[in-house]
Length: 240
Image 1 (cartoon, rainbow, N blue to C red):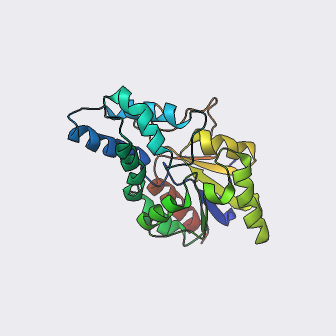
Image 2 (cartoon, rainbow, N blue to C red):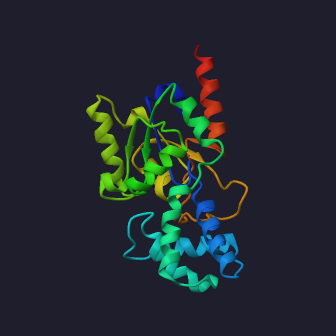
């Protein structure tokens, strides 16, 4: 049985895909390049190709790796495989938007919990993402800070060590994320309580996120950050 929200001191968040709409960011950039070069592309096809290319051996850290990814997928989409377009896709991360409900939900949740960002993105990208989200985080961890990417348990251990330095433990954390592969499965394996934000509930497939080998039933499940924040709000009201 899931614990009450008031039992947690920290809410840890995946950022890209949970709070920042990276799929629209990527497809909008590719659509812009396509329009300029007289090509039409299918967004879901582009995301499927992106997903395959992103997880090829030897991939660089995100979103720097988007420059390489573009050169891999461009020929398959009928786009020009020129370096300048790869750089453009990489740099588009600086203008990716948060989901419409992200900033408001985080602002509300920050009133009752300490929020921690856990992102596979590099620090330069998180600096931009935080501005879109109105800087709600108590602490942040990036691939630059951890030297690894989720679902590597070592990434999570960095966060455990941080909360431990404050006299707390992983039992004080509720991990919130949309990726079954990067977050929900591994958080369960690490005996964390988790919350799945199913951003693609109205769409088929996994979009730009790698498909997990096994689906993990989460402790909490919501279709949006707005729904999650509302549930926390109501839960806390019941305790007062």
